[in-house]
Length: 160
Image (spheres, rainbow, N blue to C red):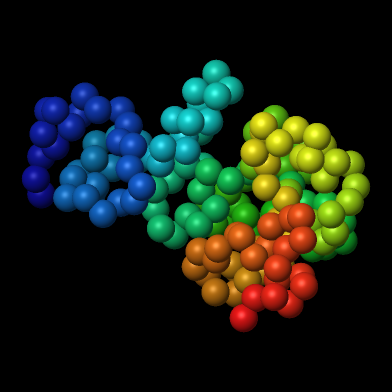
């Protein structure tokens, strides 16, 4: 087995959109954190160093970099959402927090939706909960645009 190159051992993080680079296995075996640029952005914005595992560059971590809160869904559905989000590399919050990136909902109403619309600079996405279901069913990246509020095309049957 090849020995880690000394230059790789000095690196603490590799920022990359994916894990498709020759040194990936060597870097991970040397304890180097392989993260997406979302990790850098979130840390810089908040002044907090977030756990790298939630910003993985692995394609299997579909929700990497996402922090989700659900509203307008039954408690059992929230438990399923929590499990799915975490299994696919994201984080889940029970209530609105400064690091939330997505609110899963059924209707464009309620305190969480009002908060999002009053604070567009936070860039929190209001997404129809069906987007998560579609992602779970296909276990692949599903574009959010047809599911985004206000007026998600998917809800109106405008998506083929």
